[in-house]
Image (cartoon, rainbow, N blue to C red):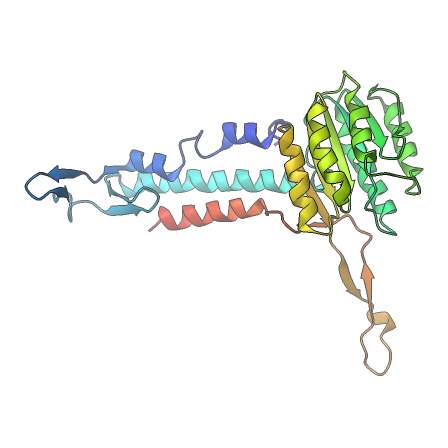
Length: 324
């Protein structure tokens, strides 16, 4: 998985997807049978299906194109395709597990070699700063450490920059960046144009390949239109990362913002767990519970779709379509 993991999902699908490996249902049917033909009969004024295959071959109806296929392959070949598809499902599951683990679950995958991360804490809630710092440190240690150059800018009335320009990745620079992140504060003043100012400041660095816009909470309505218009003036892609969005409006907006520069969107929401503390149960039998929300375990924010559904759907198709 190591080599596969360092490419975008689009390129990964080109290499390992069903279509590229001739494993879509249409491609498989063409290898194990042939379409049942219809000819137009002038005297009847309508197409008539040939009867030569009736009862001779098992038939399969494909709803997508409303066609019937005569299956001529022996069961051995069909079960070979079932095995190929089961292997494909396993590869998909491995990819999804990798994409949804550790820093990739929080931030997505950093694909470029020179990036700037723009931090927008404008919608942060009390108690979330520590969680954000933990997330950013994990990203630096697990992903940024493998690229060439990076910088970090925090949104404020005057953008707060870790370095003036993207800095080479070294053990020392990563340690310095982590120290800077640990000292971040949310007491900075901001205006409606502050997020755009920070993104434009990042875009002035001609050495970077892309910007990762890390947004905590929701984006103020008064900033949205400014961002949608101003992002078009930034010369590099602006990938958006939503962290603990409270509403679907922010998710939809950040998707639109990334689409403006043909970039990627990622979303993460902290999973809050209710943990029962049995040791502290009162004698009268009442249950005592406490909320533990300090772990970087994710769930789907409102307005997003679970990529693992693709694997479940694929598993359904392989089990139902080819084994019956």
